[in-house]
Length: 450
Image (cartoon, rainbow, N blue to C red; front, side, top):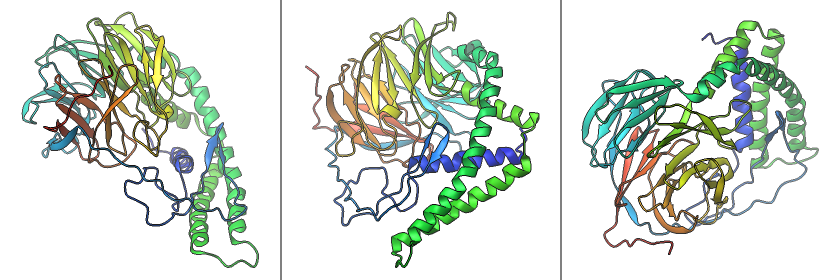
């Protein structure tokens, strides 16, 4: 795909908008709760948000009073980290892990590569047993009770036997809808281009006004003031460059629009996760129209597809769905909760809230990021950035703190799997390209919801 000047400008616009909405100007507190007691107050961050496609910047009227960082007491976990399983290949650095699952025997199946890809099979102790080649980029993977493996990626669904032989390949149910909706998708792209262009132009005088407000008249600048001015001036410079690019581009060409439609279609074709039970498969992916995520249900031959859940909110391209005989559990990370639905998509219960002072809720910007369902129906949650793993009853009662995993922080997929006996919990670290092994402590007891 050709990377035109307009495409580069739009990527810059999206990047700056995301930086604004997530917490901006370099002087703020980190989103992660502080584990240790604070030594001194941190400067207050200036938060800038995107509303209805427009960047909204609060004007600075006076020096804000710094708040003390909240400390979080992390409880003793039931499990401890004992090892890591290196998934990547030194011979092929591009073959990186995307996600993983567990079969009935407790072996781990790691989906790797950007297409064509591989499924690498490890035993519970991390020994590589087999490597299966697959003709797609494996974005999601799951195994049902009889050992059949289901893989999704590149707009396709694959069924494999327990030895990695491909038995069936079909288009993913949302792929047809994405292709049929390209006309509407094109209208959406054109509108986005117009909105971003207007937003870029309107931001320049706002940033200039903010700089002047910080400087003030007859005012002695503090170190915090100087840092703010420097940050604003750097962002202002980027917006002026984007404005210049927009003026040169004038109206986007048909080719530029086609490139953006193709890029958006590729994102919408991506499968975030899938899960299989005895009779059905559940697939989480981007909504066909607009933003957000949906869950599709098909039979074991990928037929009779239907959308059963709509309007899910997630970030970083991640929405995790896992099922058992009682329905499906979805980690709706942007709402800081777990949703429990029946097989038809009727909401049974949801639980969770944003919590930066404790561990029973979910901290950082978008969590829980992933879920897993234990043999007894209990739900395990994984939090990216923080590395927390926790266990809840099927009706949402907090049971215990499994542990804090040592991973590279970030808003990302942190797939988890639990051994049949619950003694081992596995969590993925995309950045380091490995799977972390947590084992139950000898003195740990198992809590129940009863």
